[in-house]
Length: 169
Image 1 (spheres, one colour):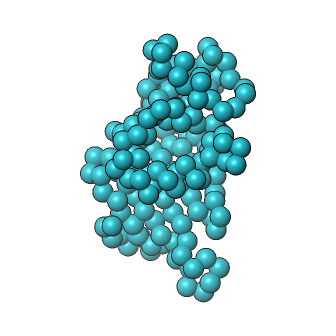
Image 2 (cartoon, rainbow, N blue to C red):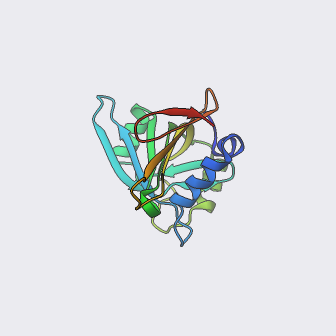
């Protein structure tokens, strides 16, 4: 498990790609957030993740499936919108509900969008793994996908092409 700051330190190329694909020109981050309920029912919704200090957070209305799911099963997947040439980025990890008023206040100060309530639950997102896919020679006959994977427990970065072949970088 890694905080956002730890992730930036050990996988700076990944963190740069994540920020580039998550944060729009208006400075607001946006992506798709997937959770699963305690019985395994999947849910996905657009969200605005919050970068605050060395952490990544999510604030959501109290009565949403996201909050219910994260309280029952803290695992999540955050997927950025597709970038140029279908570039994609996904973070996987666990969430931790923030109780500390000091930490909650810091997150509220970092929010770059207007629709939130200070009473809404806030979750700190720990990063376990990341997947980054981009295309080499996009639009040409020899186009190929480059898939890079990072996992916190091994701190290894793998890449492979669309045939699933893997190499260490």
